[in-house]
Image (cartoon, one colour):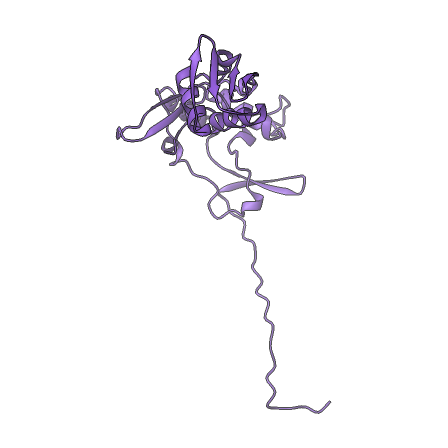
Length: 233
């Protein structure tokens, strides 16, 4: 092959980035994953958590000032810091215990004096009875509302709006003047639970709906972990 001086040659240049040790973090390798733990006083952080959680409703901004993993690779970050260093073995070496996600979550909840309510996140499934071709009733409606921690009026209004139909609350049952099937009713109630009941932080159903500070929006406040989120209109 003849050499052509006019032919452009594409050069490939590889940029080598040298990983620099950061003295702000302790490095630990667990199952081929590097965990960066800030060199901070863990007890001081947790004590500050406990102090701040004594407020009636704890907001997310209360924790935003805490330092996180600045400049650390996302795939090498243990998001639940400082829990990795919270539990330690009783041996003389004081070695950090390896924990899975559930154990770390339980640990930090206990440090915050919060009891996880995931065991009570299930609701009572509705039981549907057919009265006529276009008339049905939920026979255990009061129990469904109790499991959702909402009043029968709140739940019934959402069901009627979703079905675009009329109905009434008769004693402990809900009368629906519309042709429906059980799975459809279940889907509506599950959607109501996900949007207006369940806490996205801890999964608890122990929540209340209240007005925001500006008095314009509605906020879902968790009574278990004290987190809150704005409800969509």
